[in-house]
Length: 341
Image (cartoon, rainbow, N blue to C red; front, side, top):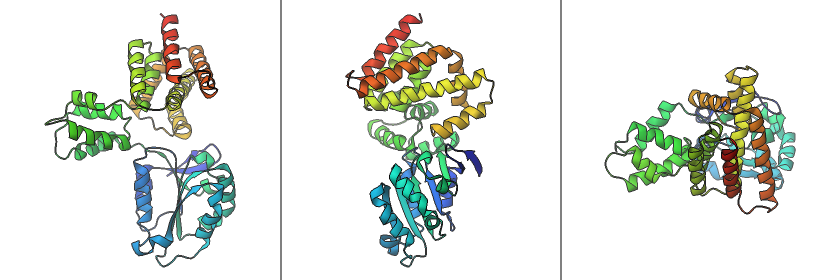
């Protein structure tokens, strides 16, 4: 376990696999913080923690609250009460509001009593530093590619799936276990015999996260036909305009930092650590290489201009000055394509 530099303090960072293994052990830690990530792991983490409490006592020794100020008194009462009989209590806090977080910072000894395991599902920057320093923090939801492929093939219940189809499924879902699970069910229902890459392309839509990343990369590489396809995929994803705009902005911020890392000759590990800390995204070697390649094909002033225009679109969307952020993105792509040719 290594100490990773956080925004507010140092904290002990572990992978999601390590976190789930620890939660299922005979002696779990007192405090875990799960940063926003793949929703597939949220119920697993809760179930792992819940299993620490004997089923007969879960109505008394297991509790879930959202982290609002209104629930702080109930959280304090749960933390301060004796175990009903199981010997271990488990508390789950989903999200943290500023007022609630501030009040929880005064209750550190209760969280660390030794007989209570607490899971906080929130951005680590919102967790009081006094708690964060004592927590096991999961920001990395990556699973080895071999393990992901194995997981996919097992869920096809003996049906054959082409290796290229597995790769396509992972790309279209951004390797989200939550999304892959539902898309595999669709593939099982709407295909027969061996599942091909064509089947995946026909049945599985590209999720907004994957499409936004593809759009950013295509623009940086000046592949505007590919960018237009990515815009279509974004529209077909069904995600809200504000979500799409956020994903695209996030992608260009990531690209900007890749550019700065390249220009300053800093190690690639700096970029990987920054993405993990600020965007809760783990960059594998392939993704990191693709990001740095994309950054090398776009000028710094072009990146800055793109981010400035995206901020303007965000402002116009929030103020109701534009009816569709997606349409504004399409117009922006047309301008960029025209001015760079």
